[in-house]
Amino acid sequence: MEDLMNKIVSLAKRRGFVYPSSEIYGGFGSCYDFGPLGVELKNNIKKSWWDEMTKKQENIVGLDASILMSPKVWQASGHLTAGFADELVECKKCRKRFRKDFIEGKKCPECNGELSESRKFNLMMKTYVGPVEDEAEETYLRAETCQGIYVNFKNVAQSTRLKIPFGICQIGKSFRNEITPKDFIYRVREFEQMEMQWFCPASLDKVTQINADSDADKRGWTPDKWFEFWLKERLNWYYGLGIKEENLRTREVGKDELAHYAKRAVDIEYKFPFGWKEVEGVHNRGDWDLSNHSKASGEDLGCINEETKEKYFPNIIETSIGVDRCLLMFLCDGYEEVEGGRTETTEAKKELETVLKLHKNLAPVKVAVLPLVKNKPEIVEKAKEVYSFLKQNFVCQYDESGSIGRRYRRQDEIGTVFCITIDFQTLEDNTVTVRDRDTMEQRRSSAMSIDKII
Ligand code: ATP
Image (cartoon, rainbow, N blue to C red; front, side, top):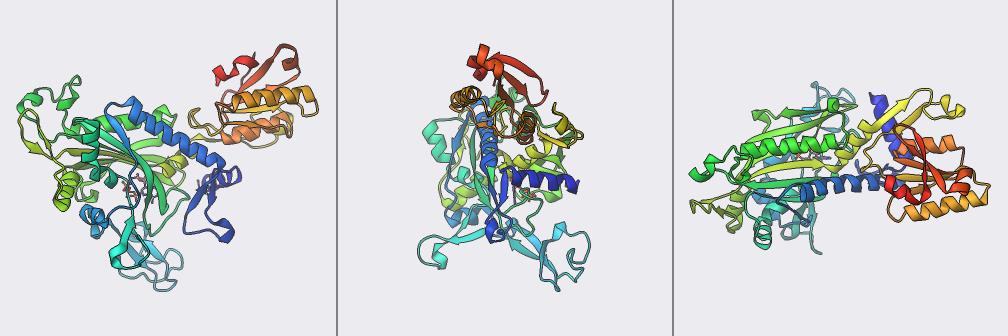
């Protein structure tokens, strides 16, 4: 399995999905850069999630809060205290530090040296705002995007006139000073999150109680029912994007593992080559966030129940997923190797071929345009014409170098959905061959209408 991971890391680097950050200076603290294909894939993942939330679902609006916020936010949220700290142990011999819950024995996993007692290590990254490096100017890079949503709850409710239940979603960078970043882009110190916070009523009055279980009137749903709803919706998002069912599971987070404010948490886990690991968390955060920020800021973030006129703090169901982890999951799930070759040519039959079966909405390149030969000017000219036409609407590559079989394989390896070949027949009847990545089927189609097929 380690071997599979090495292959994926190597493909990611070689083909321009993910590079180590600052590589020419020897890399930097488990940071990564997304190359030309990586950024397309990342954007497609984000678009799919954003459309899911703001178009497919009802009553969800977007937000883009700043990364830097008042340190009071982090004070109130509990991030500056022990609540947002991992247990750290240090090797007395080699001085390396490890997250205690990642260590299997009592010795250093690197040099077998003796380990120190554990101590709490806060994960917030400190920075200074303004020209003076003193405490007054000290703040933190956000460790989760959701706090930006909570502090804007009232702004959004007032400016959109949305009524509970409604949701706010956000995509953005978060930073955690992880003690042991590992597994390529799975655990890093700078990452992107896609979070949706669903605000719903907590207790039910007599009128809504009657409809509490009715699907027709979701206004009466309890936080527990919303939790089930969002968990199911989130799983469907993965299946809809082709994640194999056997590679996805849910795990109920044990009461002893729950964050102090959480009432319930379920992790959505993916079977990575390095084991079952969390990609997303669905959390019932109760009314802790809004009541707590109200108390700390003095700004009333409560709502009024229109029927009973009682005041309450909305409960929050959160869905939180990391883009980087998710991208790694799609690379792993789509990666396939075919011994002896899957393409038509004899030279390919001798080799191991790789195909990246990414969902067509996620694939970074949708179509490649390939002139059959490069020494026939009419074919090259026609291919360039088709390429210029398609690239206006699709991420598209033009490739004329090497045999056609080799070019198909180059495209399969990065998950290109269709390859279009311009050949001698094209010059006669203006048709091209369209090759499907997954079935390898080729059919002829009019050059004028290929944009409809993609
Ligand atoms: P873990 O237990 O893996 O440290 P967590 O339970 O602390 O994660 P949350 O705080 O629930 O994670 O964050 C929500 C999501 O953000 C995670 O499911 C994950 O996809 C992503 N995420 C969190 N920390 C990291 C990280 N260091 N690198 C990449 N993604 C991360």
